[in-house]
Amino acid sequence: MYRSVLILSVLFAAISAGTLLVPIPVGWQFLILVLLFAGLFGGHSFRNRHRWPELWRIWLFSTLVSIFQVLPDWFLSAVLGVLVFPEDGLFKFGNVSGYMAGLWAIPFFFILLASRFYQSSYSSTQWLTHGTEFKAALVAASVAILIFGFSEATLWTLGSWYARDVMMIGHIAVYVLIPEFLLGFFLYQYFHESQNRGGWIQLYNAIKVSILYTGSLALSYLFLEKVA
Image (tube, rainbow, N blue to C red; front, top):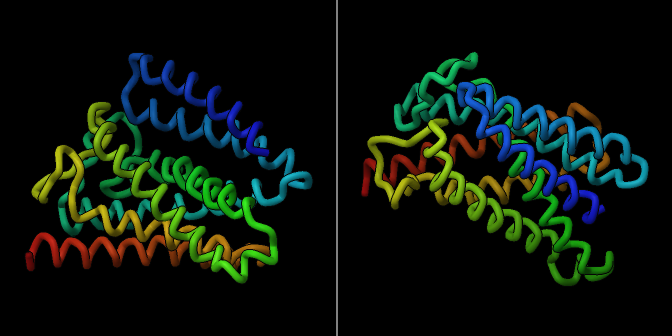
């Protein structure tokens, strides 16, 4: 499973790099990347859903949560006014560029995959005795902060989105760091809770991840930007 994902990742990275060099509006560039990821990884996961059912569940849950991640971005941009999505040639959900509804699925997929890889190093009997589920959630949180921190530090150069009027370390908004760590933790916890459950439960848990993340952002902004 991991070998096939690695091959697809190299292919996705190569095509993505080429796409970002095409002289089209940045919104369309990111939309192409989102659709490319869905086609490559979603298609591969679906075709192999009987062979590697968990790979399909990872992709599906990542995509569901990504759709609802428009809400925290909308809150940050429209209510707090600390996140800006410049005009990029693409449709918007309120203040949020349309591609964001699918863009979050990319890091989410790899965050959950990293947690699953960690879990695979333990036998099923060791999971209970070593608290592996909690440790796997911490792995997800750690990978999340690395991915999201790198994204915050670099993607502004593409003209996609940027933070304003908040404490910064370089181009990274300080108040988002703890919520993004928690986002990885929530993502894994509710993915694990959704295993072998019906579609409505998965949808409900996906919404909960975004709501908890939004609340974490609001509290972090309050204490770090208004109280501190």
